[in-house]
Amino acid sequence: MGSITLEKVSKSFGTTAVIPEIDLEIVDGEFVVFVGPSGCGKSTLLRMIAGLEDLSGGRIIIDGKDMSSEAPAKRGLSMVFQSYALYPHMSVYGNIAFPLKMNGQDKAAIDKKVKDAAHILNLTNYLDRRPGQLSGGQRQRVAIGRAIVRQPKAFLFDEPLSNLDAALRGNMRLEISDLHHQLKTTMIYVTHDQVEAMTMADKIVVLNAGRIEQVGSPLDLYRSPRNVFVAGFIGSPRMNLIEGQEAAKHNAVTLGVRPEHVRISKTEGAWKGTVGVTEHLGSDTFIHVQVDGIGKITVRTDGDFSTDFGQQVFLTPEPARLHRFDANGQAI
Amino acid sequence: MATLQTRATARLMMSPAVILLFLWMIVPLVMTLYFSFLRYNLLMPGTEEFIGFLNYQYFLTDPAFFTALGNTLMLVGGTLLITVIGGILLAIVLDQPFWGQGIVRLLVIAPFFVMPTVSALVWKNMLMHPVNGLFAWIARSFGFQPIDWFAQLPLFSIILIVAWQWLPFATLILLTALQSLDGEQIEAAEMDGAGALSRFYYLVLPHMSRAITVVILIQTIFLLSVFAEILVTTNGGPGLQTTNITYLIYAQALLQFDVGGASAGGIVAVILANIVAFFLIRLIGKNLER
Image 1 (cartoon, chains in turn green, orange):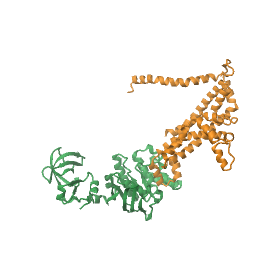
Image 2 (cartoon, chains in turn green, brown):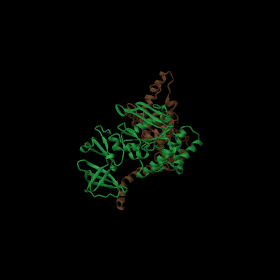
Image 3 (cartoon, helix red, strand yellow):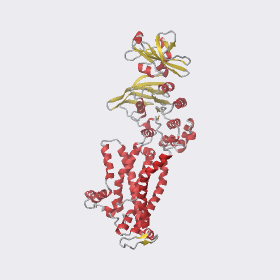
Image 4 (cartoon, chains in turn yellow, green):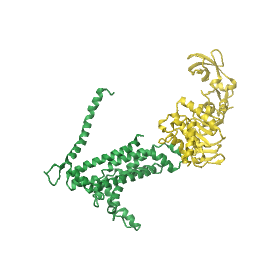
């Protein structure tokens, strides 16, 4: 079991409020991702749930029990840190066994659990190595191993993939998702990378300056962002945000359209523009078009479409996929 | 560019310094070695002659030698024990954030800047003096008989003084080691359910082991040759209770005027220091490699 409820949780350092009151419900077995730009308070929020930061106000309820002022070890949560925080002078075995040893379990039980965890994470051949002798991905797995042997109510991940290179990050993303399906334990995952959020989450919590902007499934956020911030943050490449006359035509202050929802043609369309930089990804092509009277619009089209720099093109947004926002940035 | 010419030039440029340092080391060593094989007493000038290993035989069979050797080891060991344990505790205290941290750190480091003779005199006359000393006053104000430190616990008194001087050094090195400990590791251990003592034993101590090694190594080198503190307080007494090897050699040369015997003692001290260094490096080298 691992349901976590935040009730009016807030945090301030001195007079600056980092997190003004947050309410959030996390259901047992859910994979929740906190996503937001750096400095938005997502790591602080995670550390508050872990018990590494004190609350300035509010309550944290884990499995129906108020854990707001309980010590980190008593909350039954495991955390994977950004720097992995492995113990450098202990072997991989020692690292994974450490929480069990601290728990006072007997040697045989520890041995079995460590071997099981090592088996799940493909670390069996590395149990005698020290963290310094492992690659980044292996260290990451040791950190996860140390977290799973405790059989916690929930896992907390603090930007665990940000120190890995792109290829490895993709692999580890899959491995963590796999692990979630195997263990079916609640996971809270903090990241600034919206791709990680979109691909892994059951539920995304978008944070900005300590406030929750929107909570929802990845596709919810993609299809109906509640405000300009979420619209601009979720989706890659970023949604085109248009202001001024063109937006006013649609009775909005800001008009949003995703690059994949703009059709491009060399002969006819609603907006006329000139092609700037073109990025060929093979499967897709991103074309940055300077549209007269509107500004820069990014278009996503299939990989075979070819244009030249400075060529004239016409763009047509799909009317059903337009997002309209009012003066406060809220969706209409 | 490490071409042949630049390497040759580099050697040429370096040679004056290297030669000077080499002479600085080799001339006294060879002279000491030479004197150690002579009958050379300042009270009987003109009778110098080669006597083989006789000086060594006298020095090594002197009962004072073994007492001095024991005292030297006690002095080094006792001081290391106090400074390493005290240094770890002080470093942990100083690592905590508290008001006036900067000034307190400065005060802790201060004893290191006091020269040995002065600090020994301060301890002798202002702290440990059985009549005027602070310790005696404290003992009397609680109704106890004051301790006559240098008569009753002479070697321990010397150890205390030397430890007081070296505690700042140990604290400083260990504090820097402590500050380089990754905060996330401690937090991870906290989440793993390790209490303060387990965190110290499993994380802090192993992290500091290299620094502790350095402290032991450097201090041993200096503590083998403690001299000023003994000269200004006990003069090696009462009897031989505070005479270490260094002081014994001094007494041989400048109190008994036996330069030959003192030189033999000097060579013995060099050999002993090398034996200690050999075991220390072997013991500790493993630790440093990691």
